[in-house]
Structures are given as structure tokens and as C-alpha cells.
Length: 309
Image (tube, rainbow, N blue to C red; front, side, top):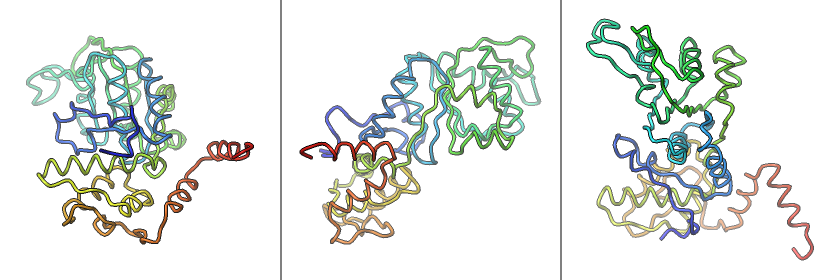
């Protein structure tokens, strides 16, 4: 049993992700850390509104997972359709997004609904929307505002009901200032904005995620399930995780393969700067205090100033 998972805060799993060859980190989300719980409150507020949502977060933090959770809580009956804007063909991006008619171009032997058509009644998730060609950004906004798409090779628009959730690992406001992103599209997306903190900024999520990865990989590989030793837990909590959840998954996968006993030790994690056994829980407290933002520090000072504390 995971002693780090409070009652009523289970890992959220996404069975629909099993339909695609995604990493195991793309099948579960956790809201244990206080910052994550505040984020979940925001998701619960935004999900049923139908507003467009822009998720800002570093690479590897789980932005698609958050988008899937928004779709699940939205009540929309259509599909969740995920598109990586950086992977769209420079030549055929318009047809991929909005669809095309038969004979719209050489080789178009049949019509296609496009990603917009596939997401009709559901949610269209555009990952790294900043990579969408500038010329297509205006068409995207027009489709969202008019609820119509004009497929390549057609004259009549097709009605669509699509809720957009977009994500970016870069600050789109800076991209707007540089003339690389549509200001109108940015303002449209900014109606519902979510900041997904880096893993180092939500340390309460680290061990629950680590134990989830450990359990899934042990089952997948048919290996006995070792325990995360106390010093290994400390090492995980103190690591800055520049690669976020993606890096954590890789570290746990490696540790499971090289661990020869029933306990994972710091050496098995292969992390730089692994803490020595002399480290105490005070080290964790100091590290977590350093992560507090100004509002959280002010709240803590107020609590400590109360009589009897």
C-alpha cells in the first residue's frame, strides 16, 4: 500500500490511453501535493464550462493527462482527439486539421473529416500549439468562433462542435510579442488558463508517482515488487527533476532492473548528487520550504506567529 497517498486521493488512470502506444506515464495522473490539489480545483471549475483551455507547463509534466481529465469531467460525449502540432505535415497541415474532399489533391482518393471532424462533440487537444503555422492559426480561430470548418476542396462549410484544449511549454505571450503567434488566438485561449507546475514544485506527488511506476513496470516485466527504501525516497524527493515525470519514470524503470534485492537503494536510482545516509528528514523540510511561493511563505509565517505555536 502506498503510504504517501491520502484517503480519497487515488491515482487517476486513463484506460483509453491503452489504445495507443503511449508511455505508462500517459495513463495516470496524481493530485496529492497541495499545489496539485489546487490545480484539480481549477480543473473541476473549468471542465464543465466549455471554455477553451490553455495549459502551460514544462516538457514532461503531463499536460496531455490534464487535458484528458478536463475532457472526462466536461461531460462531452465525443472523442478526445490529441494532435501534436509539431508533427503536422508542412504541406498537408490544413487538410489534416480541417479535412478534405475526394480529389482535393493528388492521391486524395476519399474524403477525410480531419482532426476537427473526428473531435466533433468532443475535445480537440493541440499539443505545443505554438508550433502551429502562423497562417493556420487564423483559420483555427475562425473555425472555433463560427463552429464551422471548410474542408480542403469544398465550397460549403461543415458545422462542428469542438472544445479546444491547447498546451505549450513556451510562454505564448512572448511568442505574440515576437510576432510568432496570433494575438487574437492567444486571447481566445487565455479565457481558461492552467499552470501545470514542474514536478520539483509539487514534491508531494513524487513518491506516489514513483510507486505507481514501480508497480506498473514490475507487473509488466513479471518481476517481484521491491520496496522503495527510506534513503531512496529521500533521494527522489531531493532531486530537482529537470525532466519532470518523464525523467522519474525512466529512473524508476532503471532502478527496478538493477535492484537485486527486495529494497531499492539510492545507488539503484543512478541520480547525481544522491544524498548520503547522514541526511535527515530536516533536509526534506528545508528543501520543501525553499519551494514555497511568496503567498505560501506569508501564510506559514502567519500560522507560526499565532499564540501557542
